[in-house]
Every structure is written in structure tokens, then in C-alpha cells.
Image 1 (tube, rainbow, N blue to C red):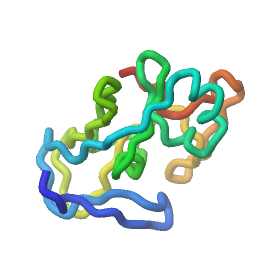
Image 2: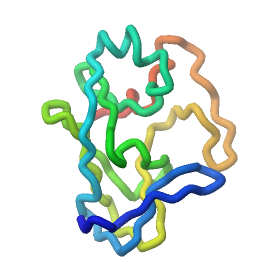
Image 3: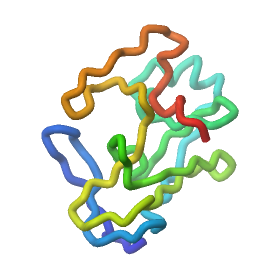
Image 4: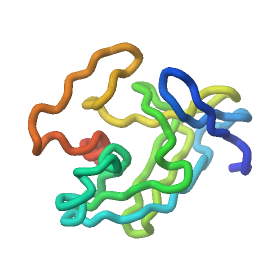
Length: 142
């Protein structure tokens, strides 16, 4: 991906987000985010009780990754234009265009169907169970 294929902007609805500055073809690697590892035990004891909870990506073994770089700036959309893959072994997450993205469009991923915030004016229910109330990305099967 070219170094300036996207830029960070702010808007009143979703806050900070990433926007294409050029046409991005489907399948294009947009970003590889290095990650910090939270082991399952560290997550349970500490990270789940912090603001980081909403930025952690789930690994199949119960560990969590915090995406650095632009990795935590992608906003949610029910029909995302960016797909991501968690790579626990290499401590990174890769983001690729899952369809052609026109210049000016926001780059979005899918967080899952149990969100902790209002999405496009829809009031969404809060998690009622402490056990189920993990982060939004913990429900995505990888």
C-alpha cells in the first residue's frame, strides 16, 4: 500500500477514523499493525478493567492483542470495506480492503453484533452479564 493511501480525520458522529485518499483496490494490504500481547491471565486480572478493554482483539487461545499504529483507529460498520486477520504468533494484525474503496470513503471493520455504543442512532443494549461483558472483538470467531 502506498504510504498515503489513507489519512486520519475526525467527524462529529464517530470521532477519529481512517479515510481513503486514493482508490484502494479489493485485496490491497492497507495496514499491518504491530501489537502488544495481553495473556489470558493478564487480561482477566487487569486489562478487562481498563479503557483498553474496547480496543483489544481476541485470540483463539484467550489471549488479547492491542493493535498499535493505525490498528485501533478503524471504526465499525455493519457492511465493512476492510477485513482484518489477527496473527498471534507474529503479534500483528493485517487489514485488507475486502472490496474496492473509493477515495474519500471511511475505512471500516466489523466489530461484531454486540456493541457497547449507539451505532447510527440505533440504541444498542448493554451486556447484562459480567462474563458475557467482555470486549466487542472477543466475540468474533477467528
